Figure 1 (cartoon, helix red, strand yellow):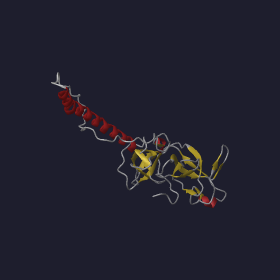
Figure 2 (cartoon, helix red, strand yellow):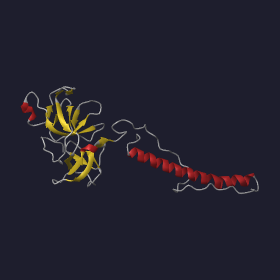
Figure 3 (cartoon, one colour):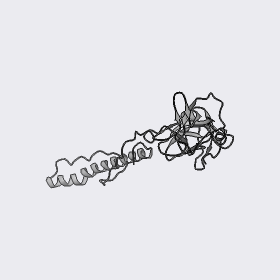
Figure 4 (cartoon, one colour):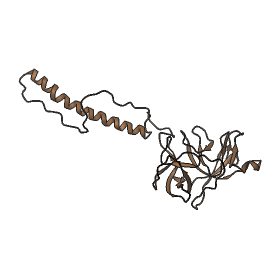
Amino acid sequence: MALSANKIRKHKLHERAINTAPVDDGKKVFVGAYLCREAATGVCIPGADASGLVPLGVVVEPLFPDNPDLAITAAYDNTAGPDGVVTGTSAARAVNYDQRGEYEFKLHSGSATPKIGQLAYLKDDDEVSTTSTHHVIAGIFTRPGPSGGWFVDIGKRGVHVGLTTGASSGAIASLTGSVGTANDAMTEVTTAVADPADAAALARDINSNIIPSIENNFADLQAKVNAILAALRTANIIAT
């Protein structure tokens, strides 16, 4: 479940790599949230399993607004403000986040038990999972945490090529039609009968033996090509 308050997230002691990001208009970002950049903009929102998000890191401390009371309940509450702005010398309506380290996250209820070194996908700004719809990679699972969650190395975060960074090919249709019988094995084309009695005998041999063996090989190729296409679609390498 997404954060509704600031959270001091357990983490392995490390030297932080702090960066600053502008907050999207209408959004509230809590301390401890996993932060993402929106697909088509330079502003940031709380992490989610959503198309096109770029994972950035964990919000670790607020940048106090003009009214410090606003920073008590969130790293930055921009629900009533325009998009934040970060320049080379200043930041407005922005948050600081850590780009490296091992942080503990809750495990989503739909997740399998993680394996060390397995990819951890964002479900929201507080939960990760072994499965995902949009494959926003929070990092890799490193070890179980003391609170029932798992530690994730956020330095290994990223996005699947072709899904959120745009390099997928267009849709490729499966091969249709039906010729021969697939048996998962390519076979040698049947040799024609030597010295057939006449043209009719040769035609019968071609129709009964040679053509079926060729068609069966094509059926095997069709099955393999379609299986490869299905796997590429599942991996989001080609469009469906």
